[in-house]
Amino acid sequence: MRTRAAVVAGLGGYLPPHVVTNKMLAEQLDTSDEWIYSRTGIRQRHVVSAGMATSDLAVEAGRRALASAAATGTATATATANMVILATTTPDYPCPASAPDIAFRLGLGPVPAFDVSAVCAGFVYALGVGAGAISAGLAERVLVIGAEAFTSIIDPRDRTTAPIFGDGAGAVVLRAGERTEPGALLAFDLGSDGHLKDLIRVPAGGSRQRLTEAVPDPRDYYFAMQGKAVFKNAVQHMTASLQAALRSAGWGLDEIDWLVGHQANVRILQLLADQLGVRREQAVVNIDSVGNTSAASIPLMLADGTAAGTFAVGDKIALTAFGGGLAWGSVVLTWPRIELAGAPRDAVESISQPA
Ligand code: UT7
Image 1 (cartoon, rainbow, N blue to C red):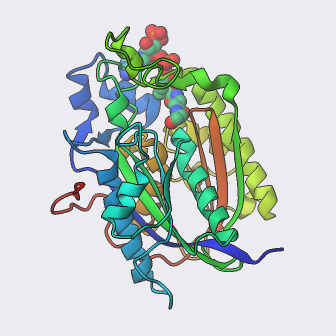
Image 2: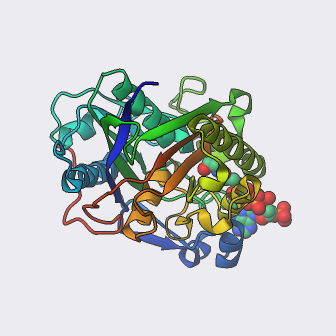
Image 3: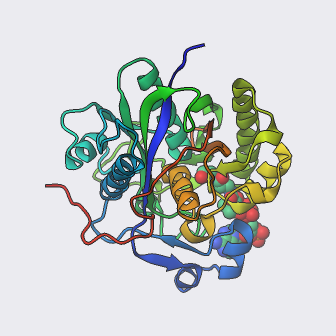
């Protein structure tokens, strides 16, 4: 077996300061704190301010992850990376990708930088691509970021989506290391089912339904989701995917300490734990304070769990995510020592803007 592996070396998260509570939403929409909380587990979400884009959140999360890698302090640790991968559903522009701008603003030089589009599974996909690049010798250190200004594609008048989603960014630094080290990404499972592509989509603005001077229906430019069907598929695919990743790693379910699932709905996380036969308390949760942040969800949960001291060095952790595409993915690792350089809710003096 190959011993070279991608190892988690740094971690960071960033949430924009503006918070929208359920009560605030209920003043504009036909909804209530009671409905939102009981159906989803969400109490509030962080939302970008006017003019703030996905890359602005990503730069801050990336900066914190690079500083974390340097602070975590292996002999070779530096605040740098030689590849940047951004998982996002909400890039700054349809063209070009946002990752090159992020790499530039982080001062990383002319490194390869590109976006990965797999909606809520995007971060796990990007981890897989980053780990593959390290295994293939294409890069020694990869900055993998999940970032979303997701509310930019949400119709504020749509009560079926507006209460669910929030904005934020999380990032990890992967470095080349050994499979035996804590933090090594040991086994992946990635999958998709395009047959169900219409369950989650933004109908217009791509090459199928193009931008035109006369907008046929402005609602087509917003995100739409068939919630009930997505819910069932989420539980089913995350369960099967995680089981497959565990089999590849040779780990039993009884060995798992923490389940870090995509924060789409607390009821999905509870059912996932039930299906897998692990205790519900092992499924960590921060959706109450951040909502569904799509590609940022998993790294933000990792950063929150680390800031709270939930994960101990050596804990066995299983990550799993699911979303539009449909696309899903899981990965397992043993938790490494990580020094954070700021918690996701820490303020910044001024958010870095493009030059
Ligand atoms: O991140 C990518 C993956 N995403 C997911 O995994 C999301 C999965 N889906 C879900 O989490 C849930 O389906 C939702 C939270 C989106 C919706 O919850 P639900 O329990 O499936 O509700 P529903 O859509 O079946 O609606 C139930 C009722 C309906 O009323 P009737 O027909 O029973 O009278 C809706 O009109 O709740 C109504 N409703 C609302 N009521 C108050 C829908 N949205 C709201 C709302 N406030 N915001």
